[in-house]
Image (tube, rainbow, N blue to C red; front, side, top):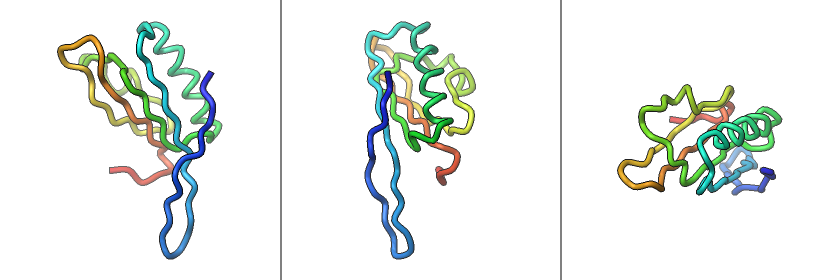
Length: 100
């Protein structure tokens, strides 16, 4: 089960913002279980529990589009594995945050 983790505070001269950050290491999660975890993550993000969520060791390949692994209300930034079995990272960033 994924649980919230308080993230760093971003401050400027006008406002202090609390950003909730989460992380999941997907090592040894099969592709079918990856999509199960993606549904669970989607629910957490929709409930505004996380603003940014990192997924490491995704094992995704570049033939999967961002739309296939994307979540409603989030921007996804990812680097897929190339040759090796492991590696790969995806960041899900709430569309409420400014992201470039």
